[in-house]
Image (cartoon, one colour):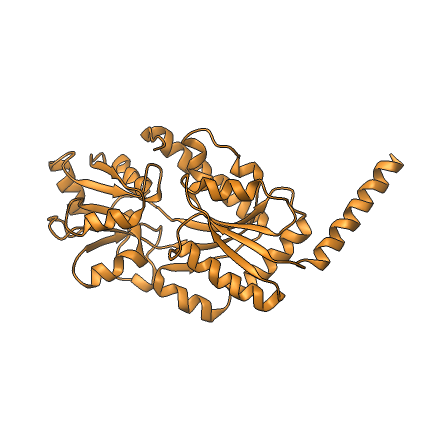
Length: 317
């Protein structure tokens, strides 16, 4: 018992010493999505702020593939020393575990640090669709079951889940057309090859302003302050809410003292009014919490979407 206690004390001292000296070398921040999107934008803003605060390089690495699983797996299997981070979307934790066998368990092999953002998602249609509200879209889909095509960036993606939830809650039937990413889907949405899309506001609002797409509603539980005149889908369809999020993670078994230090600095940076003002118009709402609060949030989100994935019979690509 004495030897065990001495070992535990030495391990604690070592962990505290490591946290005090952290970071003393470059940090790698993996984003499992392409450059230019919301996760990449946030990662690069964080990297710049962290470099200024800690005087250490923070290198953003875009590692694509596997519905974001490839980048997440790389972080999960990295040394738990605090020098490899992941910024990932919710589907890695809430949806992907239900779509097939993974080479890692995101709920076990990755440690939550903090939620970093909510992403505004909108429901739009091609202007050729004779619907100017959610209610009219539902009526049209009921009158013509299976004739409206909705796109997504792949099976199990937020776009797929958002449209699937709408169908489950209203009893309508639309045809799913999966793409390899949002960009090619929007390219087909604009000329009307697909008619319905649920996706990130920053990629849609420019087309809405030009009259190339018609905005019907937002997917969030409440109206966005920046789009106060735009109703939510939930105002017409009770119980509907799609609220995509992004989070920061490190490998499991990273010392809690290091996680606490990373959390404190990231929360400070994301709380800066100038950064919120910069990202807000892009449909990015910065949000932070404690590691424990974030872990509980992920468990609840996983249970919610797991139920929907199973009931809808969604499968991996």
